Image (cartoon, rainbow over the protein chains, first blue to last red):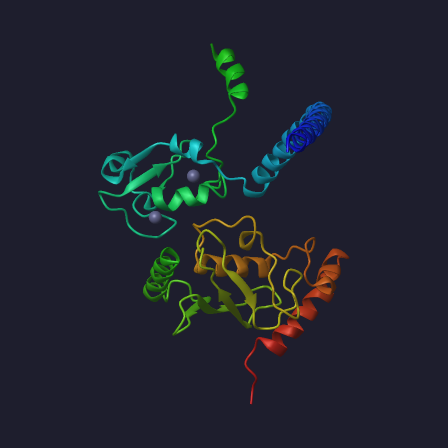
Length: 171
Length: 157
Ligand SMILES: [Zn+2]
Ligand SMILES: [Zn+2]
């Protein structure tokens, strides 16, 4: 009976030793594996970091290249004014504009919709030529073409670089 | 869409009011579609088109007057800037020089002016353009006059 217990206990111990030895092997194996994974991860991340720096560098240059390219294309294709420029143009009510204009027929009716102006109509005054239109009629046109529909002049002011020398000359 | 309709209606009223103002142009709107117009224009005097009446077809886009109308000759015409088969017209104000201040009536006037002053350097009708460019004014005029007689004058009898 005793021998049986000893035997069984020793066998159990050896079992447990065997088991713990196997567990240690497992732990060592898993530590080794995780170290390996870690090293591989570090290497991968290092490589990807290097690559990213390279590719991000090249992609930013590409991006900026394409952006300027795109900008120039849209500017060429549309040629219109952007909203920011348009907002700076003088706008006024017809009741305010009337005193400034004589009997010019273009000043009493909008050349785009052909309607007579009403007192409460909001108008846009083109700064270069002084022609007026309904705000709602001229703005869509100017966003497509930077020209006055009546005199075809560009409402864009003369570039500052060209203005400064003349004004200095006059002084 | 609404803006173009309103504007075309204004032009329609103006045409009705000023019917006798320009006897060389007769603009008519399609009964059922305000975006389709027809015009009869008289060939300008002292040109090979004199005595002829030419029919134009207008197709007005929904973005009108931000976009120009499409115009073509329905009547055959021998002119350097008009396609002989399709009647397509090469005229700057109908393309990149368009302005919303133009009307269908003023476009007709511009086409009459083009008939009197052809631009042989941008030809749609190469035969006609080549005659003018080579300086064969008489050849151009006799061809143009022949087609005016054939296509743009009411047949007698
Ligand atoms: Zn208007
Ligand atoms: Zn102007």
